Picture 1 (spheres, rainbow, N blue to C red):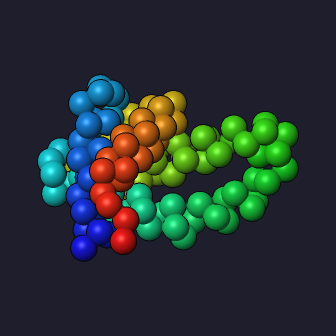
Picture 2 (picture 1 turned 90 degrees about the vertical axis):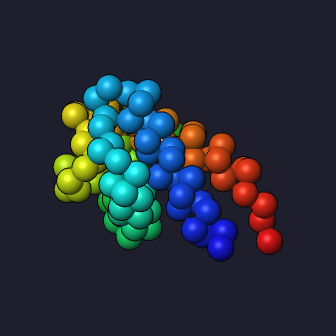
Length: 113
């Protein structure tokens, strides 16, 4: 049950990012649900490999390169899915940052078991 609530909150966070940033567009709640699920899968499956591959750069930038990785994955999902559009890479980085902040804030509202 907690998983479904967090998924819904993540979809609402995507819609909020779409309202806050004109360069990111979410066409509806159904598109936000699909995009939230795909972003979660991409972060679970692809992000660890990218972090390992870019470990030297991440160490040199004191971990700040992870923002670029998050933005790239957000941008990638925006180009793959219909109904969720990210205009450019910089919008992806800022959108991923905002999405993380908003979804974190929503996840604090959900009680843990």
